Length: 122
Image 1 (cartoon, rainbow, N blue to C red):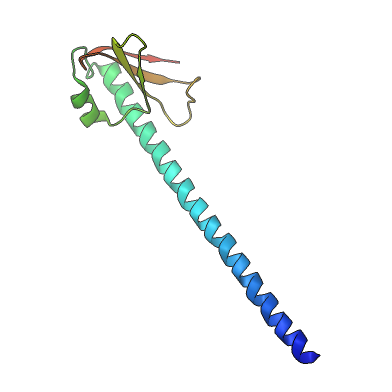
Image 2 (image 1 turned 45 degrees about the vertical axis):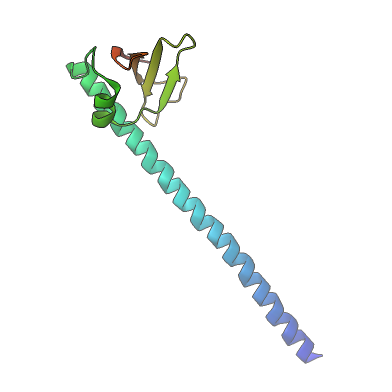
């Protein structure tokens, strides 16, 4: 009888440690993905701040092409193609702004990829 209890305890401990290990792996992966999310949010905010400064100082000007803006300021958070195909909007926003509320910088490009307008807005 005592032998059965010892074997049962060993099996129980073995199963419990596997459950904890699986849960721990999930928590570690979640922590990594959250760290990556925060890194992405920080990059979005840095890009927004750079574009905002450039609009305010006139460094971003009508007539610039997409490639030069992309290389200097990085990827926008959102790219929206107008339904008529005549303009493409690039939206930069800081992490604390949502897609519907908050400050953002919008760059409007022609279908040829030339900057037509840049504005800051809420």
